[in-house]
Amino acid sequence: MARQMLTSAMRFTLPSAAISTVVPLVILLYAPQASWLVPGIWQMVMGLVAFAAFPSMPHKIVWPGAWFLLSGTAGLFLAGQHGGLTPLMVGSPFIIGHFAIAWVLSDREISFRA
Image (cartoon, rainbow, N blue to C red):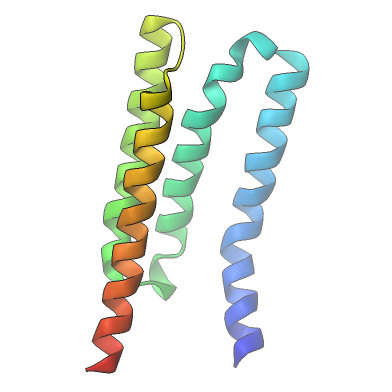
């Protein structure tokens, strides 16, 4: 059973891990002036992983997924308008999103105990 769960999780995460590795490398090698795009792209990929994992995760995972998609899009928009990223624009969405994912997963565990 553990092997099936691991295989299922890898099926969702490996493509996004490849994208999250290859795209920044290409940007840094061939267009380093556009490196400000990388955090927004990572946030959007994390949102897509949350939606891809929907069948095997609690249904509330949609909210952190939507958060990552929207905050990544907003971060790219704001960074494009202002010419760069600030630590607040990069760090805050990741912190909020990861706490939201932790809340969803801990809520799932609590429901199994009952």
